Every structure is written in structure tokens, then in C-alpha cells.
Amino acid sequence: MFNLEIIGSGVATLKNKYTNNDFKKFVDTSDEWIYSRTGIKTRYFTEDENTSDIGYIAALKAIEDANIDKNEIDLIIVATMTPDNFTPSCACLIQAKLGLNNKKIMAFDVNAACSGFVYALEIASNMLENYKCALVIGSEVLSKIIDFTDRNTCVLFGDGAGAIVVKKSLFDKKMLFYSNCIGDLQGKLIAENINKNGNFTYLKMDGKEVFKFAVNAMEKSINYILEKLNIKLDDIDLIIPHQANIRIIEYVCKKLNVSIDKFYMNIAEFGNTSAASIPIALNNAIKEEKIKENSKIILVGFGGGFTYGSCYIEF
Image (tube, rainbow, N blue to C red; front, side, top):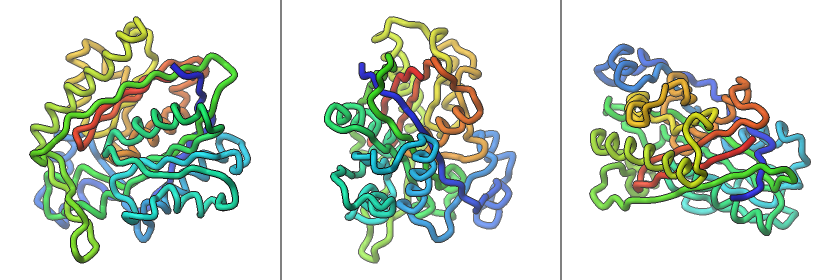
């Protein structure tokens, strides 16, 4: 348990919006086919912006929302599987774009795919023993690694970035984390190394295997929090899952015997934005006042690796 508080959140607003019908230009598909299988209606893609660019925009909005001087930040962690470069990291680039090069600060990236934001937040929570104020960002430009001729993957993903500012709390604001991984040597969900031309290779996914893993991972991650805190789902106000596929969430609801209303979802608008999906959803839920003072929530993520984990937060 840690006495930490999320004091601000923000997302990057992307203007390049693709509907399901737009994908008819690339593959044999339809709005009905996509929506019935995924729950996705639209998603956003960048134009010329890279991962650090939209991460920077989300960071600015989170700092503004927190109403702090940006110089209070002394830790930046970016969760991404689509960085601008091997090095420097997106976190270092965002530090520079924020104009924070003239102060002591630690900045680095984390790659845990779609679980990345939960991983990054847990790392930040531990490091805040020695740091004062952390900027935790999930940012992805997945359009760099999507094969737009593969209808089984291209319709699922979008670009996006979300960020939070978190710091030690004087109040009894607790967080509890659970993180785990099952190493995937079979490449059931994989985006291979950058090729010799300097371009990412396409993301590949075994949909059935990923579905089975995701359902089990979500159930296990949520139950861990409940058991550790000795509470029930009725004590949780909202669960914010990684926005991958509405069918996964529906199946988890059946296994947990809980109404889908307990889960916050914006997958219909944003699609799967990997490490950005949870911070985007978290920000939206706060702005929609679905999260208020004293709310108790669970974040739960799962992704390539296979990584998975959860976070309990008291607001």
C-alpha cells in the first residue's frame, strides 16, 4: 500500500478519425462485421506526429489539470511499445519538449505492451519514496506497425496518448498493485524488431489465444486485489480495463458474475490504443464524473509478453 494521489490527467486529442466504413478502402469488411466482433466504431490515427509528440501533448494537459508548476516533476515514465527510436527514449524526448533539461530528473520508457501503463504506475509508486512528483504517460502510434491489408488486426487498433501526474499524498489515499507475466515464446502476440530499412515490422496476433489469455488474466488480476484487501466487487465503484475487445470484457463479467456497468468502456470511440488505453479511459471517466472524491477503482491491463496486472486506487 502507498499513500499516493493522482492530481491531474490529460489526453492528446487526435483529429484523424477513422470509422469502420473507412476500412472498406483497405480490406473486405463492414461496420457491422467490426462492431459485432469488437465493440469498436471509430479510432484515431496521427498524421505526422510521433509517439513522443502526442505523449508530450497529453503530459501538458495533465500538468495543467494538476495545476502545478512543471518544474515540480522529477520523474517521467512513458509506457509504449511504439517508441520514436531505440534511443533516446520517449520519456527523455518529452522531458526536453517540456523544457525540463535544466533540473535533476529521471526519465525512461517501459515496454509491457497493453499492460504498460499499469506497470509504469507501479514503478512510479515505488520510486516516489525518493522522488516528489511523477508524470506517468501511456503513448502509442500503433499505425506504424499495423498491416492495413490484414482485416483481423488493422480494424482493432488506434493511436493515442494519456497521462497522469501522481505524487505522495498527505491524505489516506492508497494504491495496491498486482503485476505478472507469462513469457510468450510462440509469438502469439508479437511485433518483431525494426527491420534493416529502419521500419517496424507488422504486429501479428493469434486472436483465439490472446482472447483466452486476456479473460484469465483479467479475472486473476481483479480477484487478487479483492482478496488482498478482503473486499468484494460491490465495494469497487468502477473498473477501468484495457480497451481491447468488448467481448473479452463481457466474458469476464460472466465469470465474475457482475454487471458490465461496473466497467468503464470507451472502446467504441478509440479502439485498442495499447498502453494508452487505460490512461485515456481514466481521464475520460474522471471528466465524465464517473470517478469522484472517495471513489475506489481498479485498473486492469493485459497485453503482449504476455504481461498483465491491476491497480487499486482510492480517490
